[in-house]
Length: 143
Image (cartoon, rainbow, N blue to C red; front, side, top):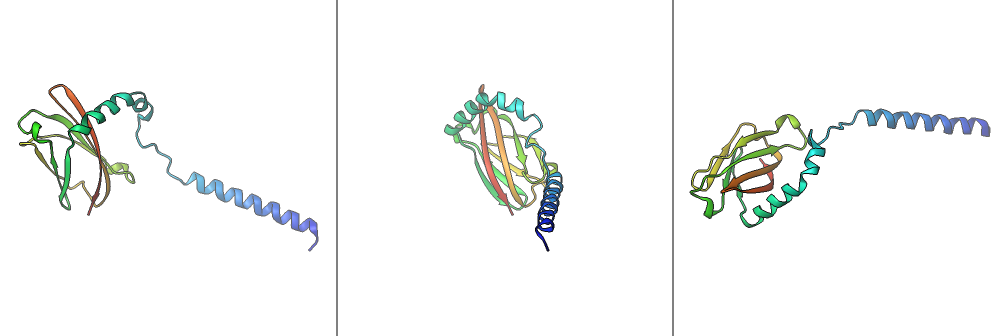
């Protein structure tokens, strides 16, 4: 084999490698974490302020069983009106994400859902009491 064939072999190998990489890139999932990602970035200071408020009033999350989760609000909020939402985010499957309203029962809330399948979840607790807003994020591993 002379050097002309060797150069042609290297070029063909390069083209085949590049076409393989292009094919693999087109098969990757490229959806964003959130549909309105840029709007959320603009409003990040509000989010940060709410997270600072929640640093002094932390909600405790405990897994009860496979499909249940217990949230315990701070004791000073036990008999007060709490409004807000729980957002369950599943990083590997957008179809499993869901949101529910907070129902305060003497500072506790039991979340029972068939949607809480086993695996990794990110829970965002956005709540307000007496005009002050709080935001807390938790990482959950459900069995």
